[in-house]
Amino acid sequence: MINSREQLMIDLQRIEENDYELRSGEDIKDYVKLMLEHIGDPEPVLRDELIYSTFYKWINEKHWFNDAELRELLWILLDEQHLFYHIGNKEDLTVYARTFSVLVVALILQRHRETAILDSSEFIKVKQGLIRYYEEERDLRGYMEKEGWAHAAAHGADALDELVLCSESDAAVREEVLAVIQKMLYNDQYIFREEEDERIATIIVTIIDHHLLPQQSITDWILNLAQCGSWPRSHSQYVTRINTKNFLRSLYFRLLLTEKNMDIVEVLLKTEKNLNEFVH
Image (cartoon, rainbow, N blue to C red; front, side):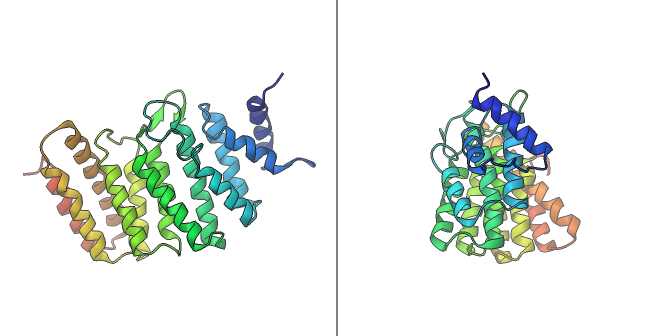
């Protein structure tokens, strides 16, 4: 007998082959229930290639969910069984429920930017959830050989990038995002090596390109990142300095290539130099 998990994989593979269309008589709600149940499955084909890809197609390309259905899906994703499932755990498989829930939250925020599905109080609830998640996530592993991508720092950054673009985001919200990015860079346990720095830098590029904060606020924040360079020497300080230095380099080259915002580029160069122990 095929169990629901195995049947879900078979059905989603068939749906993918059929351009993500359902058969006559099938109800999308039945699939969504199972997809949410298995959103953090350790099998990367089911979790990443099938469940996430199907959510992407159904939410952002086919627009098969109405506003009420998207809100209902969002509140489930933000609950203690999804985005905050065993939050704080490290080195176990619970991370996948959290990191793939936050990716689907990003998809819904993208739809919200197009069609305004959330009111102001609902938006604040989403903002608070994303800030809390990025602050409390402790399993920062990138890619695992057997289970595939966890990538919490990168997936969370994708959602924060959507958040800062929402019309409901004001300077205070964006300053909160900058603060929690600094906390992620200052995680003091994990050196990012799977291009998390690039995904995080995208948020800052978005803020700069769309003029979402005054330039002085951005330069002040960048300069403040150098504070870890003066901390007492320890392994935690080493991890924080490396992460921050690599992030600054990623952002530097992203801005340099556009040949815009050269004042910020100079600030990045100065701040990186303050963190680079090989520069005299």
